[in-house]
Image (cartoon, rainbow, N blue to C red; front, side, top):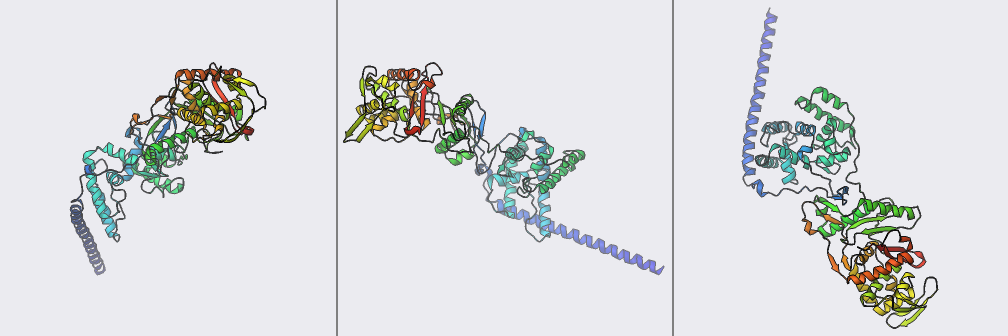
Length: 574
């Protein structure tokens, strides 16, 4: 009996001791909570006293990739930046992804006014009891948005948390919950250079975000907390664990059933490395447009400005140009070839093709960058200059003979025909059909090499040209793009047009800021008519016979020594 009473007294004292210890812990927590509450209030007043109104603060421009399209609106590719981002409306973001994000990042998102005080105090208590330091976060989605948009480089200390809390409440008063969530989902970093859910989905799954399923949505929702640690390409096991945590949170909070969560957890990661931001169609033309944009607007604006660039390239004509090259010079070991097609009325570049596979053989654009001697195609500028000066190409006769002149202005000049055969007295028109070098060197000397250069420049040649007699035979170096543009005045009655690759940039830059078609008269339409008449005969009866594949084609061939380069520049007059 005595033993039982002693046992009961000990148990009673132990019980009182446990109750007493519980009361002490409870009192300590209450005191700690009170102290923290006072400290928070004091800190809040101190930190926010001098904060500007959020309307006075400039949000960080997140930017997004610019896109380049063909003339029909089909995308050619994205211009790469430091990060990839494509903004989309909330309506295109799956409900699963929205709910997964709220579940794992801020489960009381729709209940608080920007700050989850319960979460902040709880995090502060846990951190205080764990030797100090703000290791457990209390940031809401709105607070994270504030950090990303207004203070991305601020130090991560307690004062900054208070600052974010204050600004978050300002944001909540100005935007709806849906607007805040949309801004967050379009602006948070998901790893792999991807900012926003669309870029992340294209990167991890190679599909737009509206096409992903529940387990994929959960995977994305789990990435922002630690994008590198949970990168599924690098750490698939950790990524799977994190995804499953998100799925369980969704089930616990009633967004999905437990059965749905379990089924999704059993799923593979369903990864497919996307190349959307790397892939290009018409790579040479794409790079040409990109460089033109950078030259005009600067690299930063082009990479991050979100431009939607409508170009002039015509897919049908581009395919035709590529097929023409492949059918003639498409074999390994063949010389490099290039084709440029320009609309002579507007200057719009409709095709730009080369024989080299972009990114494999080279990224050098033979159509726009390769400066080569154009050979006899340059005789057209001599002919145009002569006719513009009033010389009749049918009655004016030159002597087709070997040329050996020692001119003090130019030094020794020796010119022969390719075949070493000569025609004697021959009108300019016939000399053109035969592409007679000896006649054209005499014509160049008569009209003046400097005036040949002048007319070539006025018609559209941009490259520096030597002012020498041999310029009339094509001794300068030009690009195919320049030559296509320079023949355009012959096709449209004497008006020069500048090559144009873009017609619209979408939002952000007025359409009028682009180079719109501008026609500048270089010579009278009668000059264009007479030159075209001779160049048409050249196609039907002269050296350009291979181009006689359609009515009214006019043009001129050109070859350089040892067939190093071979050209044809032609057009159909309007």
